[in-house]
Image (cartoon, rainbow, N blue to C red; front, side, top):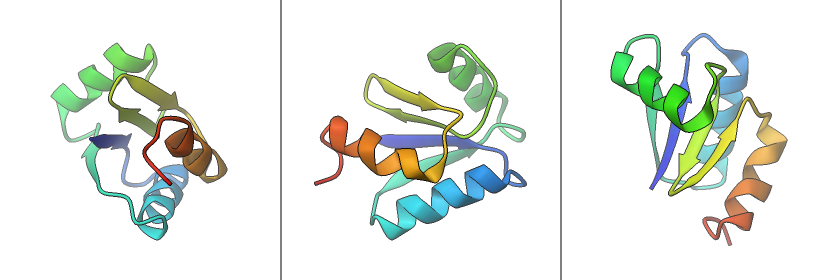
Length: 80
């Protein structure tokens, strides 16, 4: 399951969601400003507070640009 932690006003987060949609990915997004448990989870898995942060199984990609999404998903067998 793919999860992405975002802030709705963040342009990198918007670009990440658009990229995931364009790739046809199924994901759950969490607004870390509205969801304290999600913010805590993001800090736990990534060790930081920067968004966007993506989690797929035990793999984490933090503070990334849209061009890093497809390689991350392919590397972990989530995109073919």
